[in-house]
Length: 131
Image (cartoon, rainbow, N blue to C red; front, side):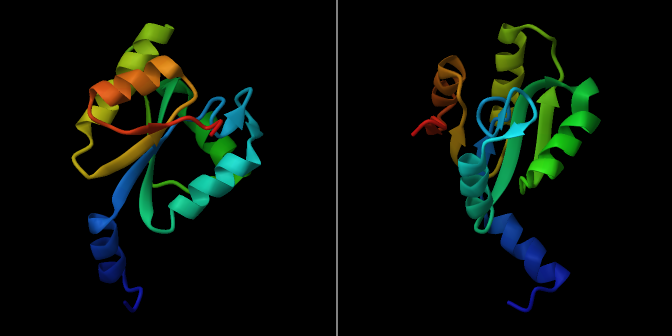
């Protein structure tokens, strides 16, 4: 591979996806980096696409992008909550986003046990950030 744009696009089209949550997974209290998890996600990004799926509302996109950049998180796509604000809506939004991904999803990393169960119901393997 010569790292031309075409080579990179071809590689990415074949890469698998890892879904990653933000809050209490890679950022604590919304802004503080969880270094061990960020290092893990960044290592995964070398061979996989990283899709961040968060319950944060779309209106928080700019601030979220800034926080992720400041923390040094490498990702390919950021999918935000477009349903509503309550925890049930946040989980439903995240589940819908995950189900919309047509690529091969290796697994999802999320701190919320209910969300991990929702991913499992969608046929996606899960990991807790605590393990």
